[in-house]
Length: 296
Image (cartoon, rainbow, N blue to C red; front, side, top):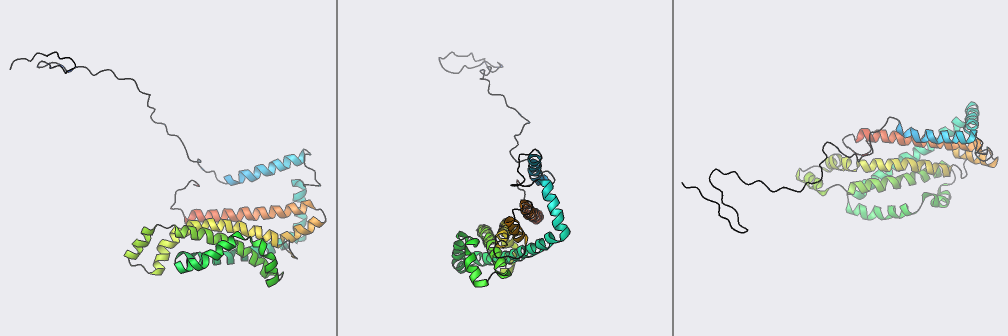
């Protein structure tokens, strides 16, 4: 076979002879350098044990420093040393323990009744259209009305005893529990419902295997808000026609300008609120250990 000579054509490809090397590729423009092996961290980072105590400790340290340096007038805000001394005196006389136990009882009862009623109403409204039409509207109206605004009516109905105080706390907790549990329950993917129907699950099996896992995150969100609502409601009801409790102790101290006793009550409320929220968080992490979230 004879060799083929390249033919020169303007703008056309060259025909190479047999055994000739292919032409070199045209030079390319250099692109931006590619950096490999690096990854930008976008999450909040690794959690620290007892890391949530850093903020309160810094706040107390700033309070102590301001009091020791004379920036705080003890007649307006007592220093930590005076508060600790007053708390020791209240513990020695038994006054603090008695009031704390009564407050815990009120908050616990209100929280219990509020959680149970809120969850029952959320399940009834979330699993039935008729239940939703009957329950959701009144609960949304109650949500817009603060529980404290109902105090005059509740006092008229229930008097000024323990029933009124527990009812005010339970109303605030029930609304928080209902709103969050109902929201997560109704956001369950409808494909899971269709799958349950295809597997011919009973109502009890459907609630246990679909409804409970799907609404459990909302339940814990509502529970955390409900715990906070119970302490907020407790502070108010114990300063209205009360004869015992931490709020009553603070109200009595206000009459005599005892700011140290008031701060002892506030610290007690803060400790119980922080501890109860931490307990709910711990239970939530254990119950929802299958989730991987930014909370860690």
